[in-house]
Length: 192
Image 1 (spheres, rainbow, N blue to C red):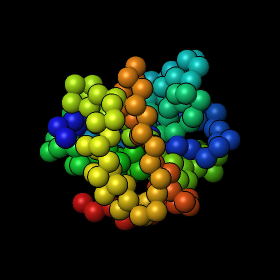
Image 2 (cartoon, rainbow, N blue to C red; image 1 turned 90 degrees about the vertical axis):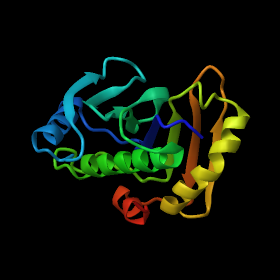
Image 3 (tube, helix red, strand yellow; image 1 turned 30 degrees about the horizontal axis):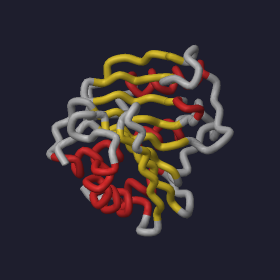
Image 4 (tube, rainbow, N blue to C red; image 1 turned 30 degrees about the vertical axis):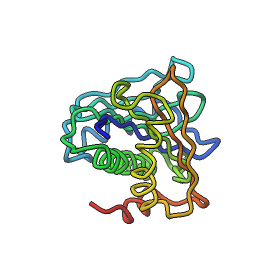
């Protein structure tokens, strides 16, 4: 699999809510306090006025972080763009780590005060490369063993996968774990 532009969304717990002004401060604080040290972070912007849209985004050189509400589901979305990775497995592993690290930062921020949790029992992966990963069953056949290896490592072997092969959208699949876990607990299970 040649595709390396991967997006990972870690869904928030249902009913999670923190006012936009506080979330904007959290995202700005992540840049100001240099809480992400291995990426060049550039700016924060809000699309909260767009219903079911990208929400609040932190734009970086290597990728973009967002508190995404697309399709009515709130979550942390990391979209990897310029990271140096070799192949789909390394891209998935890198992007999953970035999404989990950011979810942990947001969840622990004192301005959030427990209003936003990421139980990590449902994660969505999207491949942002229609040429190398069209939304077809053939793409799922190529991606599935790698997805099971990387996501099984973090979430455990007993997970369910659902591929979404809508040709009008990017190739997407969702993985669901039997039980909830914290972003930090999943990070501890992932190999380098």
